[in-house]
Length: 253
Image (tube, rainbow, N blue to C red; front, side, top):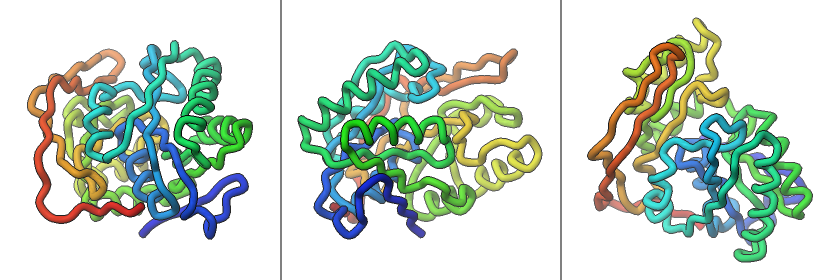
């Protein structure tokens, strides 16, 4: 099942003629949003923040060293900008950069992977409105349990690269998001109140393959970084290789 929500002034019947830039972290939500946006128009670049703040309210930082490989697999140019990651000030950095990218690619809209975070979505909406860009959040308000199962059934290969929630120990780092792990996340939602899609920062993900990747990424060297006192950890990925894919990739424009 696919989910579409169009924001601001864009009408879906006109979207096929539009050019989009996608805010991209390399995780499941931003990647799946690109797949959905390609059904509405043309995604011409992916955009990422190189933030100094590992605990940024807006931007993910874990796995950022793999972004160029993922962008290559998507067949899209990667546009990155630097920010100190100070709360709210980082939004000014985003706004300045989006203005430049808008002109460079003649963009009509920005795609984001927001699901339930009003903090993130409202700020992206505001920036887009100021820049006269449509703000597109295809996953907004989605049923999260159904969404996770759709990802798995759609051929997405996703691993967990950061955890920060009760119930999610270091054994989750590097774990594949599959039907079994989804069922466990649902149990933890009921037991601990976590967000099953990780929208509250409970975990971060990395897409290593999906229908719109031209190649599959394989991790060949990684290590676990774990803070036992705070129960927070991440997977430090040191080396990956790109593998050719068999069959036809799904690549709507």
